[in-house]
Length: 422
Image (cartoon, rainbow, N blue to C red; front, side):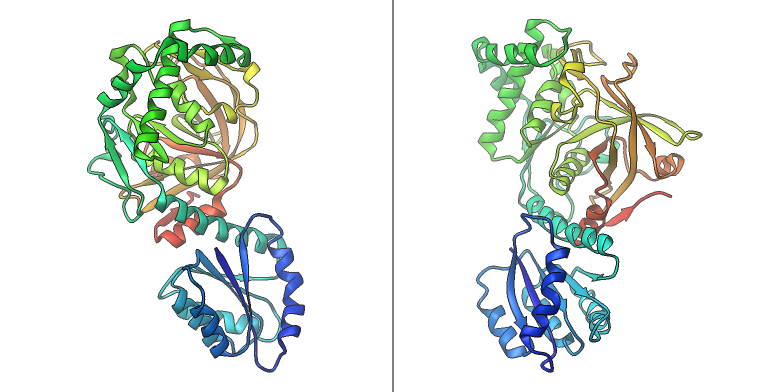
């Protein structure tokens, strides 16, 4: 729940303040499903305190509309009482801006606060929506449960010493890889037949055996059982440990992400956490991938991996089911992504930073046999040579669209550093 308060001077009537700000707020929060609760208009501290005291639950955030000067104490009272992120909204009338600057300077010492000045409507709308999406995502992420099946892969140096997600409350549940293997053995061939038929109808080309498809579906169903058993929101798997048993989790990862269950591979905690952030901020699917090459002259970057969510592909009819690149085993997806704007980012260190770049996919489905199966070429807005130096680790997360405003707000409310090279 997000509570909205209109704060105004006693020299102005409640009706006048609401008449001035009602259309402004309607225009600002034009996006639906934001779940904003109008708490009322206030020109007296006593009435405000009474309303705050009768609020049963701590709000996710509060919106303080600074309708005029003389409202600084009201705003400070609301912020202190709720102890949550604060969005201050002001304009160029009745000393609204002056009161907001004074309030912002005081509140920012104690809790996250964002100040929006209504002048450029499009910019203000983006900032307001970004604020609400970020606080909602932060709540969901802190409530999520991530399962680590096996350990981080030995080549993931950035995962050394990690036993959780830093300052975030997200629990980490450690599960032996043996539990996945035991679950895999319990899945019957009959449980895979219907899904195999659906796959063969959906994909343009299937270049793997019936057994490879069945093994991939068994892995997916076994992981789903683990997710249900431990109440998980997402998983990361030390997937290369599965190779000696003749299969991988590539297709399983794709299926899980299609179902909006965050799923990353190689036991990379930074990657799976970044995927979780990307999913909750964007509301759409995300992709974990390796940076495979850069071109400083063209300012481009190639990302590749074998676990793309099918819901991110431009067309399943143009996609191929082939083998995992390194091992030549099991089932992996090679398919075209959409040629559109993207954000590429990841967390780093002890989850105290995010480094992000924006760009556009300009080529895809290149079918380079030396790279993981799904491949995209991205034209970056940031200099790729600077990104190469500043990104805090290998695996990157790709999200459709520009989510950088939401990422910045998320970092601000989380107390972590945001970096965009350039």
